[in-house]
Length: 395
Image 1 (tube, one colour):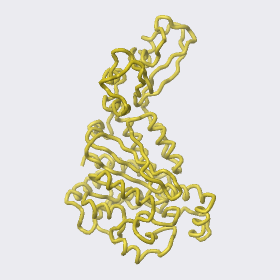
Image 2: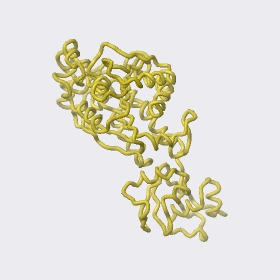
Image 3: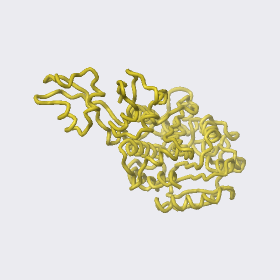
Image 4: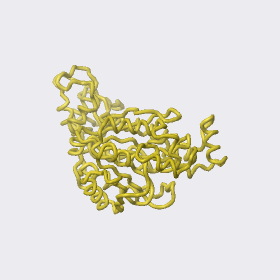
């Protein structure tokens, strides 16, 4: 929601008027100098939308404000030029309405187009949520990173490294919306006040690492050469529900230089619906973008969300730091998931992250069943994962 600066206004006064934490307003207006506001400047207020209201007999700004539980000054701010002493029946005015419910629906087949639309909608409503493109997929789709928070501690989450594990993106997006709501409405999640996390932690989130693969699983092969090649790799079948790789048939979570040679020796030797690690490490633009992101931001910890099994893999070659055990035990406590330190699998993002950065890295396997997990499991998966999201910020 936009307001125009009046004489004597400050971002602090807007924080008081709309009951939104001041740092959220400051971060929603990154090009504005808070100490040098100019009359007529546009300021974005996060977590609010304008609603049109038609004046009825006996209405006044006081009555409208009281009915809607807003301040009179808030009405003045969103109705510049309206004389409150000369309201006319049938006249329309703006009412600032606080958004208190989720605005996205992740409980659906969640492809890259839905993701892009939801991120745009959330960015408009909560402009303190930063978005940027960290690279592009094989087909040129944007790989979007979201950042929320001001803290020096950078915690990274990602989803849909594997195409048929797209439900991980849905779960991450549900938490993003829930977190943004809690921040702007001064609410708690599971009894925890959220704003201290915003101040202490910067969340780095890539909700969908493999948009081409996800779209292939959910929507079928695209027109053109990419779709034709995918059909060949899939043996001519139009059923891509078992497709795990990117559009070129490379398993993105087998692409990292952490004993990659072992995986290359025992996995498919050419593009396949799953498990082909590529002809060399880091050949795919999606895996390159994720590696570069880790190098840029120096994550304090990293969580890669996959499906399925309700387990958490947390070690690699005894290179994980001692505190990783304490963290994974807390993840297990809040979710019921089983911690597993080592597994006979290499070349994953978690493996490479632990190897190269010596920081805690986790592969969190959500849900149980056969991939792709049905969206009917969403609520159960989300409730178990919610504790992990929170614990990753406070541990």
